[in-house]
Length: 234
Image (tube, rainbow, N blue to C red; front, side, top):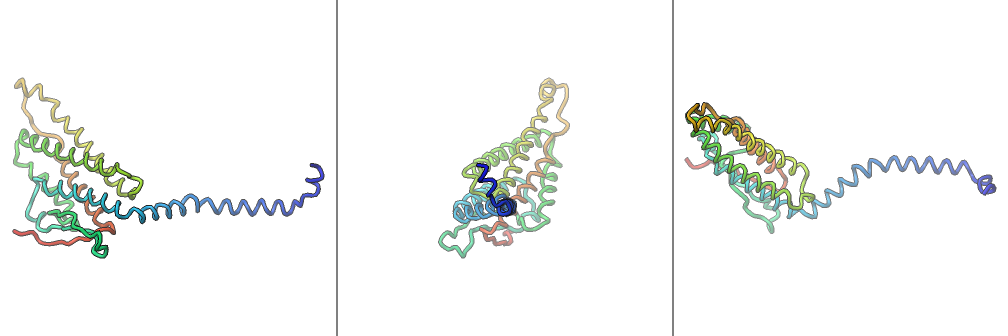
């Protein structure tokens, strides 16, 4: 053992240690960033058709929710957007959905918020609560559908998409919880000791619609889809 260390070429040994250390340090960013990037890229490429179907499902549910909304206004709904997959992939080309708001018009985002608020202005608190309860039910169904869609093989879908949809689902859940404040004085109302002066949730509902059409815009900006904007019939 003593002869081994005595005859060891220490210069070559330390040069080898230094060289290996340099290559080790250089490999860290490659392992942390480059390899995962290409891995995800290959997964997305391999599962393109699945991703398109999954995103299309989210788009369909979102368009259905928006189109079925009671909050409509001439200027807000003067244009509609039809959505399909890219024509260059003619084998998988198909129509996806139609929505009655032009989500590519920046004015639509503040407009939908104002339209929702204006809808409740002339309603009594009891009538407003009835409308809010219907919207709460629709939003809950919408949320559950979105959660079901993104929960299936989520590893094959862009994390940004999952994050955007999940954030909307969390906001909807927050609205559902806030609706409970409207029932805090129900006992007093039933006893005739007070009456309903107002309702909670109108501002939150308007903001949810704004976030929903913003999500739809982000989804349609994905490279998998083509859109056509047309005037609605008067």
